[in-house]
Length: 322
Image (cartoon, rainbow, N blue to C red; front, side, top):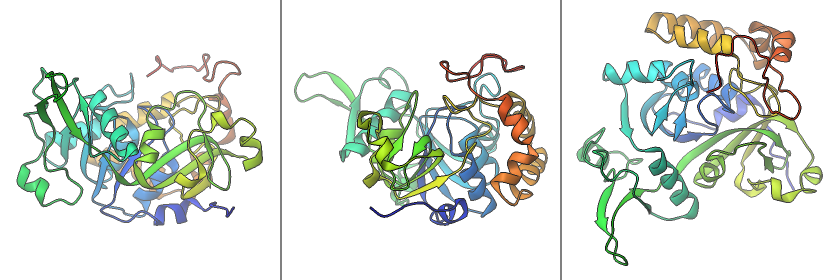
């Protein structure tokens, strides 16, 4: 089987401006942040992002001007940013198109895309105004190749007569993941919570995975039930240790509370966020230089997860888990 190994730079070059994508992980956990920084560095624009519980992963792209529209449910980094700062600023200023769904509705949309269905029925948005409140008009939807013609549709179930809402499937151009282990052939293993990574991967035309550890296919196949994303669904693999920083990776390292607080403060306005991007995205020539900039091996060792727990309970200044 052919190797799918590539570099961070070459993986980023697979993603053109105007693409639709989803990003694995959850709030401050297990995002492919090194790859996202590379997209910002490469000047990618007009992305359409679908998400369920995003954090400073999507917020980074928004603040860098890479995003045209977001469809999702929740954007925060726990106690560090109860509401993602760039996301909020850009929406309030009319600089970002946002379509609001419930968390369960976004889960259903990804599940429908993964199963090849055009829609999925839900009840979670009934009794709210989410069906009636649209982030962009029907005319704008019809002019956008990525957009569904309707946000959602309430109907009577033909079998039971119950009232349900149907939401459109999500099928993205790209899904970007960060996992604990991957083989060069594209077999992926996620330790701990998967969130919606499996559904997002199967609902995408192209999956790019960065990983903490590169492992031979044969070793992963000794416990096949733990490998939830098969090699045939994955198009590219990049070995990027600490590639999720400042976010956490279960069993590897915890999130970096100091950096997440610095990020949150920097995202308060355009000028301070530009300074953040200049320092942490544009100045480092490589991921290795970025790691040196944030404190190098000593800093990352201080974030290491404790065996048997998957996170670091002794981390100073963590302020609670998000």
